[in-house]
Image (cartoon, rainbow, N blue to C red; front, side, top):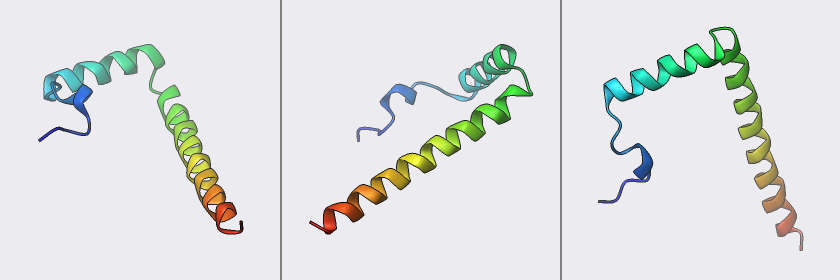
Length: 60
């Protein structure tokens, strides 16, 4: 079965921990919540845009 996340298929626990540590070192503990909040807002706006587009296409 082909995984949806082929690029994450080879990552196990130690690799994910190493990536998390590198991200923490690069951005710092205070910046990560701000980055996640911005990512959440972006996803919400994307979903709202899709919903508006689907709603608008029903009117035609």
